[in-house]
Image 1: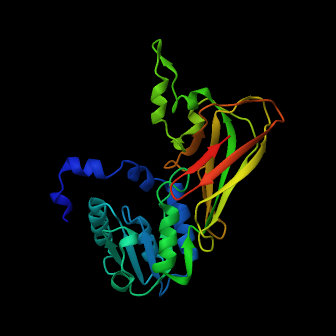
Image 2: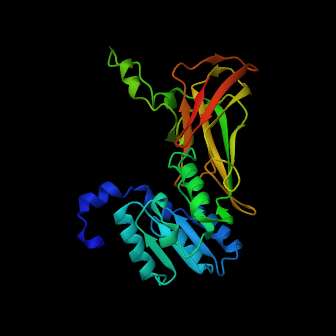
Image 3: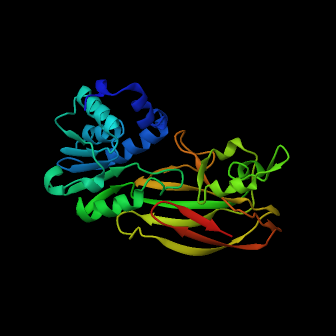
Length: 299
């Protein structure tokens, strides 16, 4: 598909604006570049899931990969990645395949099982863009048994949150004197992105570890757990703010924690329908579920 033949409106619909923020994010790009530089990619086949502009694929090629197979499910983005790769002189090393990674045929699309997986298909809460089932599938069908994963691991960390302003981003009771609370049926049931430092808020607990992930060895299947959280202050617990820290390589990490997040990522917020009021030192029980698409908290 030639990029010139796509109408402008179709391009606007199919290409999210956050791609520009991501490509301009020096902190993110530098972390991935350092992690790839640390690997010995000579003679290696690299699988890049989620081509975007082709940036990570070109980084892998620049640092010695013998072959980079990069897949992109959105046709106009895949077409543009092909153009960018060609214009940067990597057409002989990088192949952009316009498909989901689940649709790759290893006998057709890969010269052999890939030695390295590089991907950045994660949202503010880590799992919302299908990272877990994508990695499971790649490990089973597309990668060598000892493949290097980038990212290698991640930890989700959360804190009890008090913020009426953030709560109103996903809940309503009255407006202009009318009871409009029935509209809460459309509230996000799990989590949504929020640039937390821009809203008045207080944390009512110390940081708590929610889930950890080893992308090479963990089953990455749905799970649930119960967490006892001791409050550090009294107030109304509107929900839980949480974020991730990824390990990309030895000594190379990236996080979207408040105050440390690269520009292209926000924090995740999961809100309670009926926020409880707590006293300092009270122990709150959180029930947390993780599946292939979401993290859910219940209090």
